[in-house]
Length: 615
Image 1 (cartoon, rainbow, N blue to C red):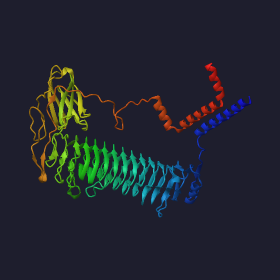
Image 2 (tube, rainbow, N blue to C red; image 1 turned 90 degrees about the vertical axis):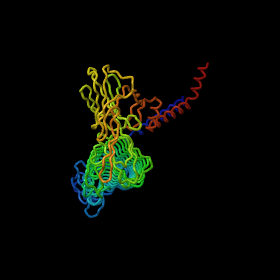
Image 3 (cartoon, rainbow, N blue to C red; image 1 turned 180 degrees about the vertical axis):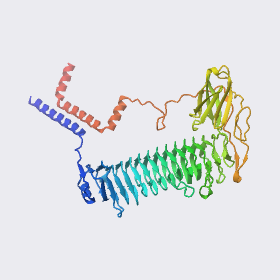
Image 4 (tube, rainbow, N blue to C red; image 1 turned 180 degrees about the horizontal axis):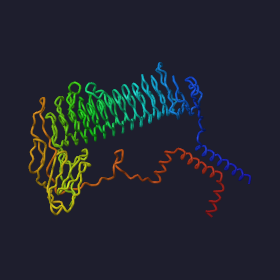
């Protein structure tokens, strides 16, 4: 009896210990103190409050205006105002209004202030995970926000204005700037130097005198979903190749995606860099180049699916050597002739400049829509070597310098898919395959006098025709290029895949006639020694029967990977949860320990029960 009581006491104590352990693992930390800064306090008194506060405390500014402020934060504090407090720095010292300094200040938050300084508004130095939100910050003689040798700084929903540089990031990593406005700064909106993993997301970067974003000697910088407008001197007198919306130099892993880059001195300039993606942007009305590729060596540069319109030149290649340069799926159109520095030519869709000497054969320039540019669609008169260009869509009147070695243009084709279904396909002039990465083209399809309009997707536009229309002419037109064929009475696909005869409307100088409408424009005399050759973009043939493409297996996810089954087994879910939640491992360990202890104490009883069961 005594032994049993002892065991019971031990078990009760052990269970009590487990209960306390589990409970304490979920207990919130003791609440931090809330400390008020009254409206009458001066800088010295406020500094005393910060120095006396414990790490994790909240400092709440009650006043609306404090002057000659120069505060140092060396512990984790939550510094807030709910009245839009103005903090004015000293006009002579050049020091920061807030200096957040050292590793002990990691996790500090500053929210809601209007900060005006001379040297810096906020200086984040050698610390981690600082959060700046809902602030208006400016510094007349320096950077509104300076981030140096720090990690994980977040700037959110703030206005960074009227400074020499808006945000200066140096020797730092994992900086994020989100939902903020960076404008009216005397040099750069955002300056990223010698840093890693900087993300600029959904920001408005406007009216900065030199550059919207300058990136140099940095890796893995992302500019996503932002509006970059009116950066640089947007005039004939002030336009410079070193100014504009985005400047990338000696950097790796830069992504410029889904942005609006409009009315800047230059659009995007890339110099001596590698692994740069410029994808899915709208790049329009920039005074100089939409995209300029410059320098001694560029490697792994991907320019895809951009809308590049109404710049002085669309894309300019002016690099000495390029390795794996991919320019595809872009609309390059309506480039405007205007005065540029050094009397540079303008109004050109795709231009190869005097510095271009790339003869590596490792460039792919294909499946772009290059058309309707003021002076020329493509030109390489001043380049050191003649470039090789793949199959592109040129519309009705392509004007291409004879110094560009270009492949056959993309052809337009009517293909019957079913009894009343037709596809207008855009076919690579070299591979004879559908150019699935061609930008969306507006197509007009006419059957029996009834017209339909549609945009292409994956290189084709599909139309359904009223079965009551009977036989007649089918016509497709895009960018003033027309193709047509006859529709049969029975509305059934012909078993004969031989192209029907038809008349194609080709670019000026090309001959229309029966059969395929592909052809080459007559050579036109060009200005200044250029001669222009046309690359037709139309064919008048149609295929009576087409083989349907197999459906893709799985839809693409947002990260570009193919779709997969997202279901998981119970085992996989258990592994996921336990790995992500260390507390689960602790509880499992305690339960196992409890089973071992109970087994030890009741070993004799268990053995007796086992022996009885055997009898």
